[in-house]
Every structure is written in C-alpha cells, then in structure tokens.
Length: 315
Image (tube, rainbow, N blue to C red; front, top):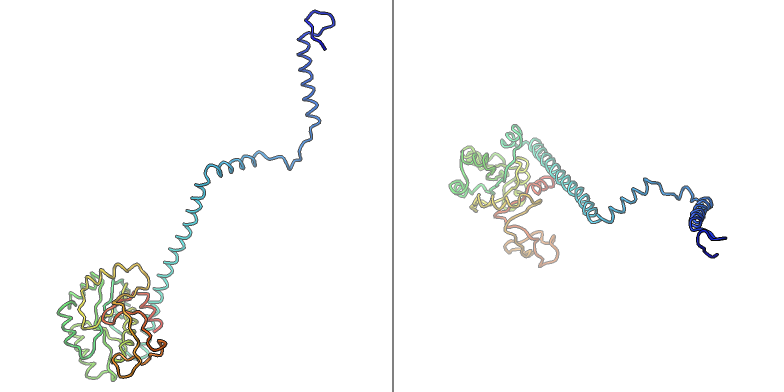
C-alpha cells in the first residue's frame, strides 16, 4: 500500500488510517478477553491472604533479628519463672522437713520419758522465729573451768545473752548429755549450774569420749528442732570465738545451699591398733593407706539449715 496526500484519487487520508488502527486495537482486545482461559478458582489468591503473606514477608525481611531476640527473651522468661518456683518449693520442703524433725524429736522424748526442753516449749508457744546462727559448745561434765572461762570472755551472760538472741539472732548454748545412770550426782551438778546460768542445751545422749560423733549428730538434730536458724555451729569448749567475725563469714554464704564450712583437712586412715587416732572401722575406707574424705576439723565448723535438717531426718 502506498500513502498518498489527502485529496488525491484512490488514496487513504491520515485521519482514516488512525481511526482504522484504533478500531483494530479494540477488536484485538475484545478477541483476547474472550479467548483467554481463566485460571481455576482455587489458584486465585484471595486478597486477605496476599496481604497477610505480604506483611509476613516484610516482617521477616525487615525485623528478623528483632523477632529472634524477642523469641529468646520469651524463652528466658519461662526458665526464670521455673527457677523461682523450684527455689520456693525447696524452701517449702525444707520448712516441712524441719517441722517433721521437731515433731519426731518431741515424740521420741515423750516415748523415752525424757523431759521436754523449755526452749522447745517456748518456741512452740510463741511460734518459730528466724535466727542467724546457733552456736553449740561441746562440753563435758568435768569441764566446769572451761565453761566459766567462756562465760567471762566471749559468751555474754544473763540479760546480755538474751539481748544477743533477740537483737542479733545468735543463740549460744553449752551442749551436754547425761550420765549412764540418769539422775546421778553428776547430772544434778549440771542441773544446779544450769539453774544459775541458764545456758545449757541438754540432749538425749550418754556422755563418753568414744561417742563424740553421736553427740554431735544429736546436737544438730535437736538444735534444728528447737530453733529455725540459717546456720548451726559446733565448737569445742577450749576454743574462743569472735562472734562478730564468725557472723560476717557466715553471712557471705547465707544464699548458698548445703553449706559446710570449717578448717578443711584430710589425713590417712590409721589401721594399726595401739597408735593414736586408730580407726576401728578402717575397712570402710577401702585399702590400707587410704585417706579420709575431706572434712572440717572438730574444733569449729558450721553447717546450713538444710544439712542440719538432713542429719535430723536420717540420723
């Protein structure tokens, strides 16, 4: 086809050419819409779905790091709550075990016909208050001079001792058992001394040098049933204690569980008869030449309430 100027014979004007092109274009659109195959309804994305997916993609692309940090924070929170619940449960169990131990001690005393301690009667009548520490001074019938030395040095007497208990939460008692024949002249001498000073803690134990470990065990079991304290201290009557320094040392360990503090040592188990510190039950420690497990020297050491409760329950 050849283009010719408008007005020429047999030619097509430019205006008609433009109109013809527009008509062809419209026909093409109409034909395409009718012939185009529509997709299945299940393949058409819903508007809400596409919007949500778009938001998710944007959040994943722009804030993935923040989302991860938030998830970590959410993971930490349940752990903290669980840890707090476990601590609360442990304290509740320890309290119940202490009350059970106190009830057992009272029952044993009643069954054995032993007199119930006045401290126990007072603690039951006014409710158990919290103390910082209980110091039990291991003493013997023949150690009157040592006890008097302690009374006139580091152990307060009379009202000052009561003030130490009420204001500082520190209990101090001489720990003594009874003779093989209860009510004898030795027991009456201790009763007279206790009436004068009021600083004895009498336990259900037959005094004897070869039964010191049993005496210590009974002391811890009895003390935890009488007083609710953070620590229970065992000290010999030939040791002079700085109460303030001892309190500072123990206060640093108050938040720890199952505390056992003292001058720790270990030594060989002596299996030969006739030597000093012969161990009659040396066979319990394995082969000859073995050492004792690490432990505190007997002059002075302390244990926390949960350990004292354990001793009381499993004595």
